[in-house]
Length: 434
Image (cartoon, rainbow, N blue to C red):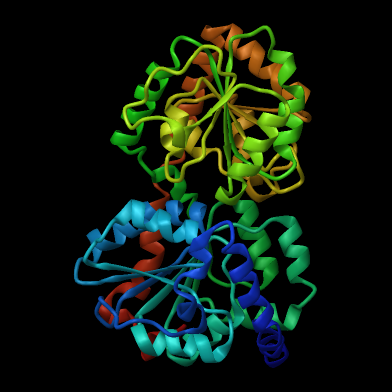
């Protein structure tokens, strides 16, 4: 089955490369480092025996940040290879780690045995740590062939993904057998991962709760809030295609409120598209990219602030009173609500949260979040919170308490990884033992 899977990759490779070029029209980063996606890399700036962490994009890279910092602290003699699959993920890694001398970033190649073999023989990693849902059959097979333990951490698996995986049981079972240990986010995730065929599954929680809001980002958020003035701010975070239309159509429910809508599309290639939506509706707006570095005052006539920047999500949250988490009005599975909760921001979430099911349900149960089922209901709930600051403040405190109670997953994950990272436990002998 894996041979057939590999053959499919080689057949679609020209189309995959064309897709990179096509996406590069709007996001030039897709046309950079193309050779890395085929397994060809510049000379490594890190030593052999590095710890390889793979985080597919922005969310996973941010989630990996506390884990990577903990790995560097616990094993200071080790370097980190951080791979991703999107330009925004790579930019996030640059933002978080800068030019850290012990961290090298690269793209993960397409999942063929040849390309994965080239990556492994180029960097010679000691251990491979996959974040969240990154199960690549040839990557895992090549790691097994080179006696490299594979760990799946901060792991989550929705019911939808479980059903998809069961369509290719032989391929998925082989990949699951090659994973040495799994640190799942929740008991529900652990149960599904075991049904997936994973062994050695332990519940560790979500390392995203251990990410500390950067002080400079929070400070910038307070500066942005000063520029906005005393107006209430409703943030719509990580909105996806189709959701902005629903939100903007329902925006009239806030009138004649002075509320400022802070809209932050999830994907940068859609910034201009959303700006065109605002213009078509004759909504007065300003783009974040059009503001000065020290945030000049924003006119009270402005109805929408378009967050068209990368790496400023904590800044946007810190400037907001209430946050709606996108990807949940449309059936896209939702996004992570943890960053908003960590800053004490009341959260509103839509009906479609299957990617973060357990955490979302817990947040709703603890009154840290409110679930709505439509854009008009979103505006109604936001209006009620914004018109009653005491209720908004109380819910924000519950959100922050909820986030604090979830902390500690990074240390639990380290305990799970430790047998595979200590020198005396790794290498061919350890792999054979596993």
